[in-house]
Length: 285
Image (cartoon, rainbow, N blue to C red; front, side):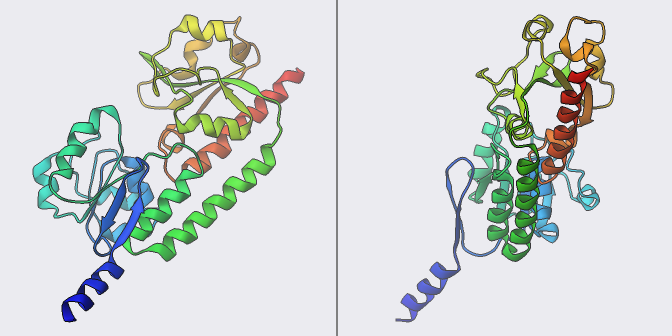
């Protein structure tokens, strides 16, 4: 009877959620030592109330300010397994992409539960925050943050509903010329704002495209993200036949707010919507 009682208590204490890969993640008790394997994950963990539980993070985990003090265990592409082991994590939150499949499998072999965070839509962001809060036992804080994010998204959807479509090119990098397809969450942000991704049908999530391909598609607006040593949207100024150039619709936004699928992407989407609205206004010139 005592053994049965102990097992019942353990079963009640166990926490189970489903991650973005559709895998079941179960931990016996709230995670107290968490490792983040992506910058957006670090932001999610803070937003979910887990600031004091993060014992390791990858490079570029620089928001909020306190994140800069978290010990580094490597980068998105290569982690130091010895540092991971030394951190004694009871939960690892990873971002699945082609270059990290091997290292995610490596950490799975340590026997530590792995939650894969890969939001495909804006609504997935508050959902991620809540599930991470459940895993860390900080569900109250996580739900409060998620409610704010959902309210902000609802306000944006109401504000930009049924706005005229703006065909858009989203430029991640210029050498080579990278963009994002319909598989990336940025396309969902564009849709919310009334934008249309001219490369949304491409099979690869982050494809390399050509200048000729962009010229042929003739977008009405072009977005780049502010980065150091990056030419950005100035690349297009010599191409006066482009509608985006003729209408003065070459825009630069903060890449950290849009290229990371974390809570701040709601703020980035608001800025994206404002620029697309400006592009609509330029039609009357």
